[in-house]
Length: 197
Image 1 (cartoon, rainbow, N blue to C red):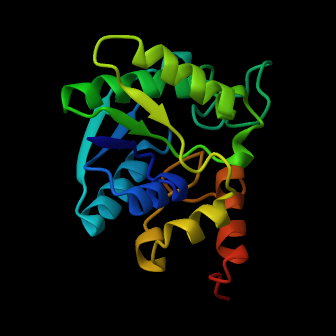
Image 2: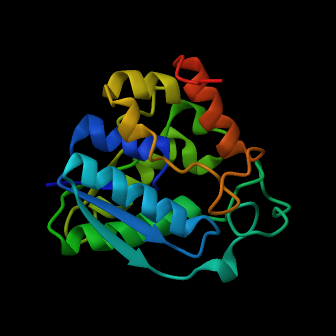
């Protein structure tokens, strides 16, 4: 059984449409846009008839940058960087995935996520190795690791109406229009010829 780590953003929604896992798992780890991400993921999962599960674990005390609503860490390669974020949420989602009977956890990491170490293929390979050597043998895969966001949308075949549920803002529940998430969202729709003025 497959599960997808559902962030409520374009990438995870497109992965869910493309790969049709049985379960989507959203992690509210204390990020500022959590409620909007949750609502987006739930709506998209309803549209795709995918079971939706949520894990709540407030880790905001260790966050930094746009997602935490604080100044970026001195270690931050990009403004939304949160220390060990992908490792943290994959561990939490992985625990839920095992409880629900999943054997593979899909994540929406793209070729263009390499600005931070936990967006690189080597990280995906290592976290999968780490999780799979433990009880349950859960593996982690990133089916779009070689694609950009527009390429993923095209490969997935997702319809515009379902993708429109996505929430990409890193700073809050309403799209700020200025963060890297909002800019990526707009640029992806523009590249697809879906932006309307």
